[in-house]
Image (cartoon, rainbow, N blue to C red):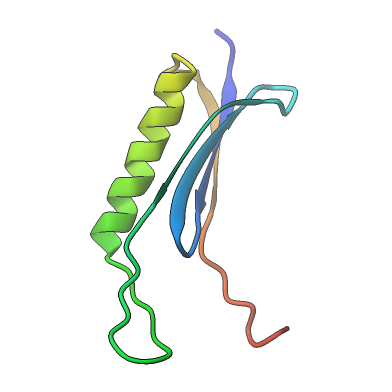
Length: 88
């Protein structure tokens, strides 16, 4: 059975999943935006349940597009929202 790598990217405005083959070629990708909440000026908040549900949905979508299942995954890489710490 051929194995693939799943990259799960959790950004500030969207969730994305990308499947790669053993040569680094993109096999499938899915992305969905989620709601931004602004409780006061200069603040932004996100619903963690919505983040989780969009990430689960794009992962399922990418696997379905490639006609694969979790059994085809050799590894999963995860990246999440990052703070530049005031740099630039």
